[in-house]
View: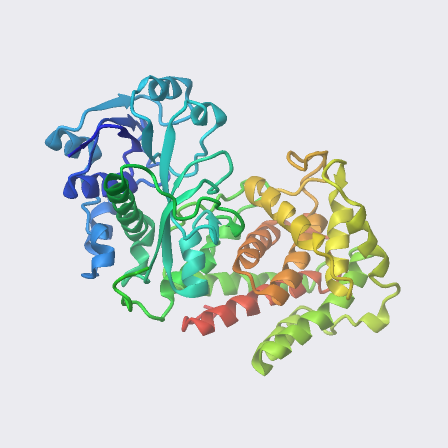
Length: 258
Length: 248
């Protein structure tokens, strides 16, 4: 099924690969994809190095439904998938969504909603946000409690869960209205959180958000006022290691993961 | 393995900590060994510091000891053992002149509409945590400094109105140490993980600095106090999670 009013902007990251494979699997094809190209040989934030992509993918161990979207092929480039399923796309030579040429390309599109899946560490500037489009972003963390970066490592330490929240982006970081949010149990292989499970959790929430949109015929908000909570900055590697090496619960205890 | 995050001068080459690789238990072991090496190295160095930093430290130490004692006898013991590695004697407040009360008043007068002197702000942030004068502004101002440090990995001498881009020097070890002490007190009391994360980054920076940038900037036992608080906090968290952190 083609989503006529929804398109996507994507760097070829593990998250974009998880998103597109989940969209295809659920027959929710975006009307168009604008690909942000990384011209460099060096991976950008969110991109797996060639040497590690298969190893990471092989480590997905869960069979539980809540992690179904973590079973994606992290080595499959997005262009190959879009060619295979006839999803129209264009390639921008800029990797930066804030580049004026990218902003103009966004403005020209007729669709009103862009699924956002650019490279990590980039904030959308006013010029992008004032194109009149909505940017549907799935934040890796349970909002409003966990705003900012690498919040899933923090929530693993504090409450033994991961989270993902679908929002429409606004100028303030992770403060847009929440369409849907979910908590997930800790994955069996915590070493694969950065590239696999974080992407899998976000893909799961993205699909459910789009299914809700189709069911209700519009965008409904679970939390219109996404206020309060704490802002987190990139977790220090010592704490990240403790979160990964944690000997605590690692199998899902609640398949409904809500 | 060598602990990579304080290997090079982090004022000259800041680390952005993005997508850091998983290096197994060895990373935790190298972290602890690296920190302990700094504690031992600094015992022979020039640890004079300046006032009121020495006084603030003398008031902070018993508070930190009490907090760790209250968590567990073991935690308090570990903290004291590490403090004693760094110095033959623990600084006691009965031996210093003055008290932190006067410094707390500054916090109420600060506003983002005016230039803020970082040294004054840090003294006030520490002082307010050492007295019974609870001030809700303390978290607001600490969060502003955390945000500035996390974004730039620097602390500047002052912040003009708006509290965004800093001005003046950003190489004062004294400011980074005071910031670390403010974070130690806040994390020890509140146990909120984001402050421990920032504390670890500030300590990475301090431990990465050459001796000449530290000499005369940090009071006696000052560095071992913040490193002891950080190390024991990490050890306690790791223990709670069933993770082993043993020095190499």
